Image (cartoon, rainbow, N blue to C red; front, side):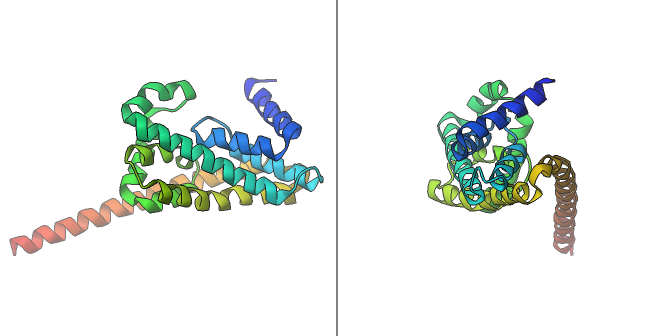
Length: 210
């Protein structure tokens, strides 16, 4: 059994041992930028609910609250530590500088909407709290948007695991496909945005010359 399989088995045992509290703790760690796969944690919790061992609504709620707790911790680190601290120590939790740059780019472009929307996107959702803290975004607004944005993600995966039952692990393949689609969509939108902005600038320059 490889390291990844052992890690996944550990997550299962952890959740199976303490239930929704385990889901809350794991999702807290995930939102603190640690490599905890929510696409494993939440569907597995949903499957346990389908077996009558947990309540599926509580699985989704515990996941959402865990996301909020972890996001607040990451926000606080960004707020008080700043970008240099994150760049220096992020490597110890597998956080690379390109992850920070990607999240910063989203935050700078879309502001408050980035906090809500990024919670529905792979990878970016985990790291967006750090630049929000660095930028010293209003805490109340950040917390509210983070929680509201996390609810669809957490409940969707929890109920998917619940209805898929023992086949919940097949969600991993769907998640990979979803990730590819999202990345492709972001790339297309970014190119369109760049083209539109450049064209608008060219038109403005032409009008000045006239």
